[in-house]
Image 1 (cartoon, rainbow, N blue to C red):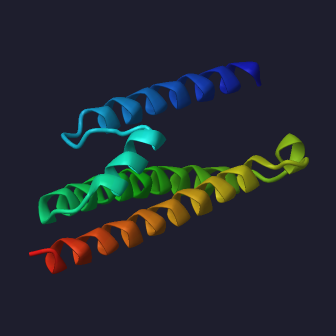
Image 2: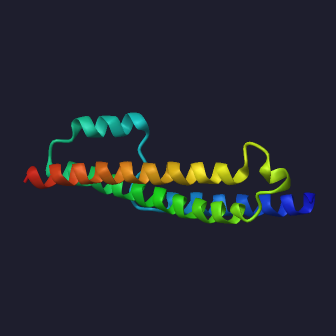
Image 3: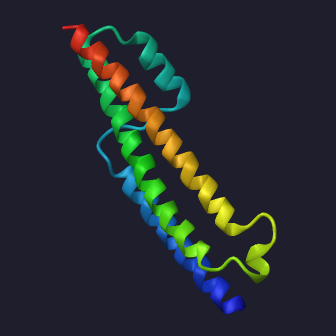
Length: 124
């Protein structure tokens, strides 16, 4: 039993490391919350709005990838809901909630990207 858990934990760590490396390799920079807020406040030109839209599109893509990964984990965990996996909080519920969170965040990023795209087109 402990061997299975160790193997599963090792695989999860490898997948998380690969996902983090992929997210950092994109060409769109990652802004801190304060940097992003300042960029939004300072944006007045079409190029600035377009850059913000590209940033939010890249974040949307990242959240969609995370949601897809979590959906696969949710499906995997749904196969075993008995024994220790049936106790609260169930691992399957955790995966479901993470999937819903990533999907929600992807939708929010999509709305932000659309907003800044519209500002970009109207600023011309």
